[in-house]
Image (cartoon, rainbow, N blue to C red; front, side, top):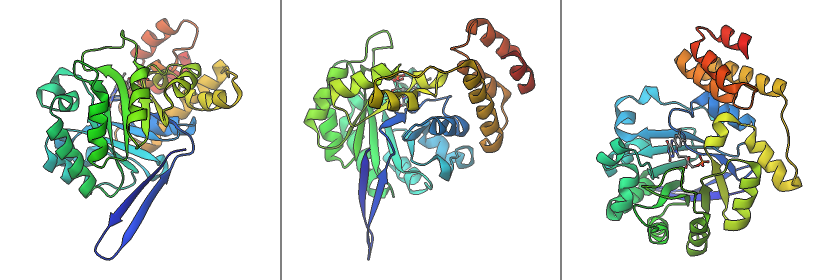
Length: 316
Ligand SMILES: Cc1cc2nc3c(=O)[nH]c(=O)nc-3n(C[C@H](O)[C@H](O)[C@H](O)COP(=O)(O)O)c2cc1C
């Protein structure tokens, strides 16, 4: 269980903000995936903390109403991506119902790099430092930073020490360089090195595809927590399964009925919590959630053609 404490020194008060998570297995930020209903589904499946997708600071300032989360999602990490300290100042001051505000310093996509965002900050450490300091100064909750291990080479210790000195409360490391894709194995030895080099908690992300991976990662890196990405998209059960596996060394198998019920629950949450009904988004999630079904590939194609959610439920 991680505990983050931030001392808020106001005019007359010193308030401690303390956040605890019920386990150390978290949902990673996932763009185009982590809608509120999916975050809630992962929370129900045992995630100790859930994350928003990356939120562009400019979009947030322009269209605040398009970004939402709920009290019952907490503990929640809201992740921002941008490169203007003043925009971060504006964004972080506005936030309710969230426990951590995270800086994305790892996204490798061309558009983000062109804008100087995400992994581009790994090449401009003075700017990264200014952004973190601004966030720490104005944020009502703890600030964290999610990084890759470096731009072209492994610089994670230098970057980690800078993040710590700038006042962030923890670091999430996806241990690949900006140029390495999922074909290159995540370098958990970098997580171990970073953990030894900084005093703040270190969270590992990368290649956590099974409960066994989660255990191996904790054992090998001594990280404080893990963030699961791709595996959760198809299998939100991975959170509780990993927690159980850490305790018992036994793997849980899920029946088809359980997985169908999970899809039904997702649809229920989708109706209750999303402000816009987007059939394409709903279909995507249902198609991802049938990955473990027999004949999954064909089923996914068929789900993609469904015109209503009733049709989806009929064919799964
Ligand atoms: C579809 C998708 C969307 C992602 N979006 C984000 C994002 O918004 N912010 C971020 O920091 N990382 C993002 N990532 C990276 C993940 O958070 C994670 O660090 C990475 O996938 C490695 O973890 P995994 O092997 O468990 O997937 C994304 C990854 C995927 C596959």
